[in-house]
Length: 486
Image (cartoon, rainbow, N blue to C red):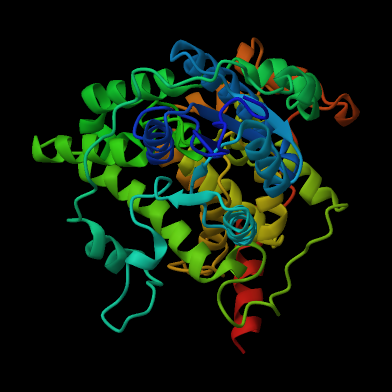
């Protein structure tokens, strides 16, 4: 036999490629199952591949570090199944065509993504592969409900969450797919790049070691977290999820962002808890549908990622000049508003931020400081390990008032009132703000180890006065909003 070892003497192609992206797991993985089935039909192997393409290079610093940890775990999981993860860099279409040529693979499988750049890329990849006589199939797997499968009675897409929820809440999501017992491997593997050589955590610089302490990557970690939450904490979720100093949420956001656990598995487990009468279970599964809703809107109105979703907001007098001191102070957690500053420090140390704190920090930026939501969106994109394009964009526009199903602009979060309600003992604020404490905890001190040295901040610095007072900022925000309306 000559040529690729997966081809017969007659030139018949054998085996299948599975292209991993934001689906870094083995269980409940439709694309992997299809690739294994295709390999079985042609009596060939499966070649798992992850490609460092423009999407990877464009990720924020924290998301890159989190991706590296996920790829390490996926590689280990594949080796336990007798397989390997092939790593390649380049344009996705060209890499897949080259790999198919090297291996003689008959088909390629992947899970669909719904952002405009991925859709455009994937359409081109599918067309090119089919043009070369290969099977090319994309599969559902990132969402519960694909965006085009949920329509209003008039046939359009949903623009408001509650009717979207009502339309999908009774849908059956299908049964779990077990991970393959063994993944068929070739006799000889094609060349692969080294994950260490990609230096994905390098953009984090001195912060990488700090954030690494808060990363628990991989499919096993995701399942452990899901079971711990649903077995122990979900009953109190309805109230505890807003208390910023306690661990009252599932902690699954980064796992879902990278597909280390399937949202279908989480949904089915959450629904089971609902049927068992767990009080917080419905509120929890609604958050999974909120995630679907964000992707639904991104698919149907992709401008939500970059521009004001609602008409009439382009004239709002937002500041977008990132050289301004107020924006720098917000990024550094030096606004003088304790809950906002604690939230920004938590994100810089852990790569995550409590959802209630996210709303407060975002409201202060877009309303009290009247800074464009795009500034905040870009900062979160760089600093969050659970970054997701649809969730990030919809969250920011919801708070700013320019987005779908939005909190009205005139509803301005008061950080002090929020702190009294959701951090009544001040535990969260003390955990993340060192200045002003005689013996600050390690969590607060870690910020100074992670931050750029050029910021020249120290734990002994005095707490800053508010850069914009809460009453002053609220009144100015409402005046600006009235000006926009008129």
